[in-house]
Amino acid sequence: MQVASAGRGAITAPPLVGRPRLDLDRILAVLVILPSVAAVGVFVYGFIGWTAYVSLSHWNSFVPDLSFAGLSNYLTLFQTPRFQIDLRNTLVFTATFLAACITIGLGLAVLLEQRVRGESLFRSIFLFPMAISFIVTGTAWQWLLNPSTGVNLLFQYAGLPFQSRWYTDPGIAIFSVVLAATWQLSGFTMAMYLAGLRGIPGDLWEAARVDGADEWELFRHVILPLLHPVTLSAVIVLGHISLKIFDLVFAMTGSGPAFSTDVPGVFMFETTFRGNRFADGAAIAIVMLVLVGSVIIPYLRHSMRTEG
Amino acid sequence: MPRVAPARLALYAVLVAFALFYLMPVYVLVINGLKTFQEVSLSRMWDLPSGLSFESFIRAYEKLRPNVLNSLTLVVPATVLAAALGSVNGYILAKWKFRGADLLFPLLLFGMFIPYQSVLIPLVQFLQWTSTLLGVRLYGTIAGLVLVHVVYGIPITTLIFRNYYAGVPTEMVEAGRMDGAGFFGIYRHVVLPLSVPAFVVVMIWEFTAVWNEFLFAVTITNNPARQPITVALQNLAGSQIVEWNVQMAGALLAALPTLLVYIFLGRYFLRGLLAGALKG
Image 1: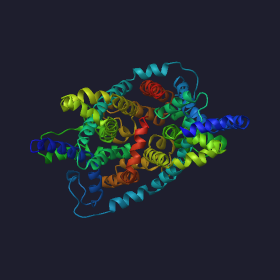
Image 2 (image 1 turned 120 degrees about the vertical axis):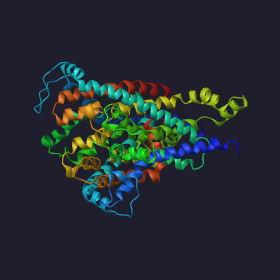
Image 3 (image 1 turned 135 degrees about the vertical axis):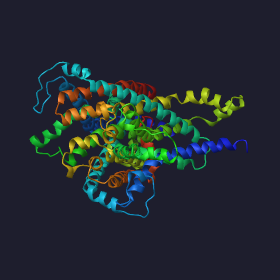
Image 4 (image 1 turned 90 degrees about the vertical axis):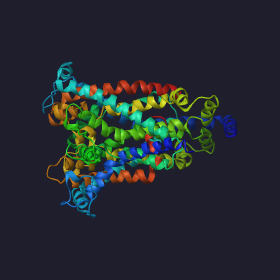
């Protein structure tokens, strides 16, 4: 504070020297950030615009044909059974993946807050999958959920009658991918909740205890409402990952039997780069962008407003 | 005390069970990677190897070595450049707010959430175009991938640095100005010396993200000799002729660098992750 007031006093003394310098610096600041802004402007917004344009064109063969096709690519896309399955898979995947990550993440965070011995070791083990590529995760879980070995073998050892065909069974294949994704990201969810719990002042616990509230009531009526912002962040971060998921599915199961694990990301990749149907691929990409944007844009607006 | 014990026991049982769940894939990759080719069998996946054999790791390394080198030549410049740009941008957005900066920032941030499928077609066209028209070979090369990762890395690196610099007292910047330092002088002598922790966080984040990335890599580099490790691993794992213990050893090799970073610098790693959730 003292520095600030001393500084303000000094500025009034030589005003003629201070002013122009300041303006030059402001211009410099804008000039220095300009290349980054231009790059993001072109590579994000310009390219999205171009993708949108391609999605409205006839470019569905190896030879570019950018004549205007209206919404016809979108109309055929939404009538394509594979894309309808993709949208349903995305919804099922997102809902179960979010539910699993939030339940496990919150649960583990609360457990680790109970003055656990070896807490940092547990935390490290729960979180390390986050450091690994989806491609490695997919490779590993492909073997673990291979019906003739892996987890099924463990069930046999344990004498459990339960055997599953996992990702070879169209009815539950998508949940095999959910399992792998939850393995990778539930620890991260836990870390978010742990950060949230550590932000809750300790005397709040004490005060509630003095009031005679038991642990469960305390958790439900005091702690859980305070964790709402964390849950919101978790839903946004995990939700936008699952809405655009590609690598994990591509590495683990691909489209799966009867497209049971197919998602828009995989469909877009195959349509565009295997089938050379660029306009169709662009239309899928724009639908993905709208899905992700409908989650992210309100969140960004909300964050900017609360930040002030 | 004895009354509490069963609950405590249950607590530890749950924690240990989850620890085993998270470690299970690593266990399978390690023990099967260490088995001899004769010993590998689907029905004995969980059995420990009778002795240590590194032949799978050697085979996997022989196959993946060029791609590991590709990934290294990709990750190092991409990480350094994205961090440098993020630092300067963050400094400007935190300490030199110009008109429109508050609108620019969320527009910049949106770039880190988009599904990259929505820029992929123009991106490939652009990179091919630079090759044919400008003679700069960016399509199919590591240089092209570096450019792509730097540009799409700008939003997150700028976010982390901006949040970090917001915590640097403005009085320090004012004091620097009183000493006659300008835009660059303040950055060089006041802000940069304070930036080491933020650089560590950002560089770990970028290193991990770029090393693990797949979609750009698989669409921009089509020549197997130029592909990063994730694409090579995907090809190896999809191969019918490569033994599966070699695939497992390969998966472990691909995961090793980022795992080591996590083990030794885990604290900073977590900070980067949480910054990705917007709250720095």
